[in-house]
Amino acid sequence: MVTITRDGVPVRQSKRAGDFITVREVVEEIGADAFRFMLLTRSADSQMELDLALATKQSNENPVYYVQYGHARIASIFRKAEEEGATMAGGDVGLLTHPSELELIRQMLRLREVVAHIAQTLAPHHLTYYAQDLASAFHAFYRDCRVVMPDEPHLSAARLKLVKAAMITLANTLRLMGMSAPEQM
Image 1 (cartoon, rainbow, N blue to C red):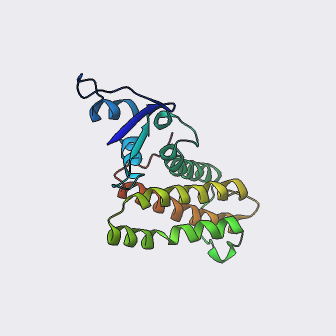
Image 2 (cartoon, rainbow, N blue to C red):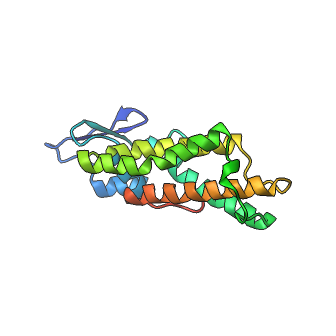
């Protein structure tokens, strides 16, 4: 059973009166990616509340937007790097010592263990939490560490390698959930 709300106010439905919202209508309103993410966010044995207003917001409050925006932001970094002639060539990942860099690496390394846990427990909702943790680690890295730095090409190359790995990990996580990994938002 799914409770549908708009800004926290329940959308009135009645089985007896035949007044209900179909899955098709919800997907048309919020999009397939948001619908999948919201459904996957809860354990199969728990009550689900789907806030239509939250699912359509383009802000950090919307978890699907937050995760997909991480991927789009990385694509933007690579467009900027290309414009400025920065590449991953010669990047030594041993230069990555900032706490935000290390946290992003730790989060990326967790994917295999999360997928194994999901397979053992048949609990896919853990993947949505992982996706949010990974996106959060990336956004913190982005806030704390400049990637494209013409005056420090070796560190820039190392960070581009890190960002590429984050992009691949985010894309794989989104694909595992049946969602798109947008290049722009």
